[in-house]
Picture 1 (cartoon, rainbow, N blue to C red):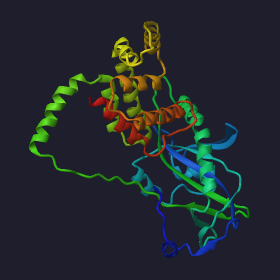
Picture 2: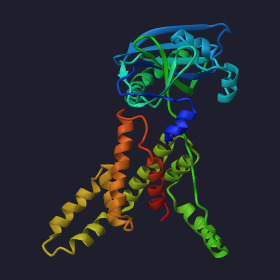
Picture 3: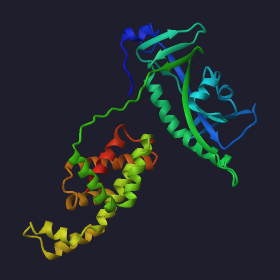
Picture 4: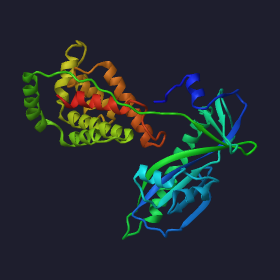
Length: 347
């Protein structure tokens, strides 16, 4: 979530100068630092190259020092104190740094600004269009670079993994003034506890011993993996895999003839030929959403129309990720997938 501050709070933080829309224009470059695990480089080594991929410029560096690598990409350090940064991110390097941009120039929106003694500027969330554009650009540019770098570093007798540590960005105004556009974001979790009496606790234990052995082991595996994840993308994909696997497993166990007969018996005009045709159609369903709908009609009768619609939204989000149209699920979708998976698994 992004915190919203009052004008008074912004002024107390030093953002006293009001910016009019269009008063500033800036071009931005982002730098993302990765730790190259499994790789040892000489102490003074620092090499950078510039190239293009997916129609955009990028710069890539390998360095023992994150600040030296960043200076090879742009005119500036990645962090003020490298020793403190290394302690915070729990890394000793070496580092691979990927710089994306510079972008086109973007006009600021209304906001606040502070000027520093060295002539640089810091604005507060005054370039939202640039921020969104840079994120979209990174999603297009960084994956092929990371993949190529991983393949280039790995050898038959050497395994190198690139772990993302941190991302930063900076801008340049038309006149060359150095600019940072910042905003404060935070992440929080909350939960509510409620009391269980002794009978409820004993019943819960009994339910576990009865149902654990009945659960689909593959679905349960991915559900448990989702519970142990912190990353929202991995949580979402694990919970959705639990949903997908369980849907296919339940669909395979349905007596389609019985349920088709039950449905068509309520329609006087339905003939045996109609029932046979419907049964064949149901057995041949391959689309995941179609199978989910049929399972809801035949087995998961407590699911609501909203549950079914939401499953379609979850599936679309998963498909967007699988086909490269998105790199992460919408906010809250990991939790939604977890709740829906819980609803159909705990039966």
